[in-house]
Image 1 (tube, rainbow, N blue to C red):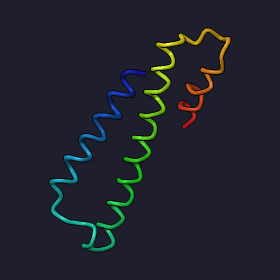
Image 2 (cartoon, rainbow, N blue to C red):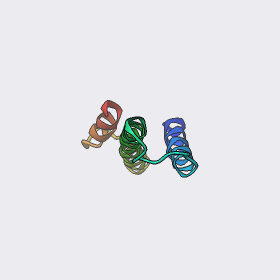
Image 3 (tube, helix red, strand yellow):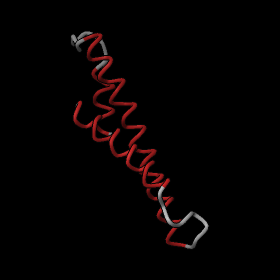
Length: 81
């Protein structure tokens, strides 16, 4: 899980660096608009997934999924997402 979190953070950081150095902007045509739309949507998806995984990791470290509570549901939901 830590590797996935690391890769997600790396992707979001690299995407931000790439956006700053772009030679075109969103108003430069259909390709630029589609590029920004798709990569931004994927970036938001990755950020939401990171939040799910971080909450799951926190719950796992706090409660160690003792089987009594419904905390494993969060891990399952983040895996499905």
